[in-house]
Image (cartoon, rainbow, N blue to C red; front, side):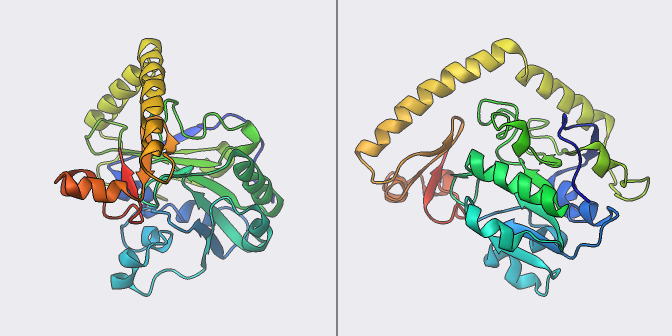
Length: 280
């Protein structure tokens, strides 16, 4: 069965009480669809959550997985932007593909637009569900609502997950699904103790209202353009380019030594950004 029609995402939103609950049953949703599938695909350098054990199974970092082995079987690991490998990785037994449009802990690696479109096409061919994990890169952290907002519609996902910035620090998570995915999420399928609480939803509504205000969006774009131009000057002193998009950037290699020299290691260097990126 080919996955859904190409139309606006967000027919259904499931509110949860935080990031861990948001993703703890993420692999469950595609498996409930009426199609026999046994495998999921994640990407190297990805971090799709740390809660045991479904989220850990689709997070490719061995450091997080090792203490909790064995994990859920049937998870393949692919490489970001490797179009040639898609046919072999995504097949008839593939249940879902989970992608960060911009990898955070992996070192600010952005997915190519054409690769996302090819991935969407391959998922449609075999009936796999395409999931975008926008926990770190979504909600205007790239200057747009989603990191994939600028991608053509034929590169859009079936499911989007979001959490971290949604209520500006207060615990909340949300999963956006197309109709054909949401229809199998019947009552009781996903349990959450505090999900959809009035306080969390009120805060989320307020934050989204503020962020989506036209004046705020214009200010974001103006400031991010300036930030991107200034950050591009780093390439004069350091060998690798600045990666990512405005407000979700990373500079690599020698920036690590710079941070250590300035005694800002603990505050500014994320230990899990694949040991290569200085995230800002």
